[in-house]
Image (cartoon, rainbow, N blue to C red):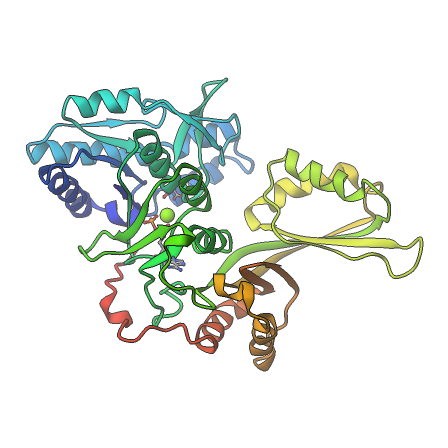
Length: 414
Ligand code: ADP
Ligand code: ASP
Ligand code: MG
């Protein structure tokens, strides 16, 4: 059972999560719970770092950020003890979550869950601090990137061979669009791994992308559901298990994109490799890449790509040494957004892209970049037009569900 930040935001909610965990135990299950930091704790910690340093050391950043999840786990263990059950809280490191050496977006490489197993065998409920691990070689505390507690939970579930990994959050499951932007969005009973991967990659933060990858690779069953009621949520399943394959499943969006354009790139083998090797070396997650062959022979090319806005500074620093050689000039646009549609049905259905572009054109939304996969179409657009674009596409593809209205959704202040 994984509880997100909103679900443990104050004392009342910690007690509620504790009650829910205990109910499960009393129903005869053995339970490991992974908790996130409370409310906006992680944001506050990032802010705190910014107050003492403009470029906080990544290792120390991880020491700082990992504390939020420890607080939640210790408090929840106390609440469970008061309900008459034994509980033990563990840091990611104590729980045996081993990662690579990178800081602030480390990858889990192994979970050595013997300590969790031993505690379960002694009939304890185990609380694992999400979002963190310890690096395999240097044994530094690492964190797994924003939203990383989802991945902690899936990794622990995989290591223990758990029946299910339940992700308790502040919405009732995965929706056909972010219900905060599209109140008529429909809750999906099931979504395939393929679609969920595309959705998470294109901004549906309800599940961290890596948690979905990990679940698919290790065969973990994810059930994403509300921490405020007992209704079933969304199951993430193999494509073969899907009952139906609608043309379009969801509209997703991101408001945290930036774009870089490199002008005057030599039209020769190895030019792109140099640029993207430098970015990879700095652990920058590049998303869309667009390059065209120069129109005239001997001309220079332009390469544009998108990246998370928070990586802009690091990307700049990584590319600076290549200026004048791998490219002539670098332009950065901070405020880009992205809207995408995802659906397995579009594989065999022509005309979807034309419809997307038409819907945006009708409202005068300009498309800066386009990228596609067999089951996704993404458009980079102006940040200010993102919400409107999501609503337009959601209604153009008729994704609203009958009877699923916003008032059923108990949105709490975050
Ligand atoms: P937690 O703290 O529980 O991990 P998150 O804030 O990370 O919660 O994720 C839940 C949020 O994801 C929801 O409140 C919702 O605004 C957002 N979200 C974005 N896209 C979707 C979607 N397609 N379906 C459901 N929620 C979505
Ligand atoms: N607390 C971390 C974050 O805010 C991890 C998580 O919530 O999953 O990103
Ligand atoms: Mg989350």
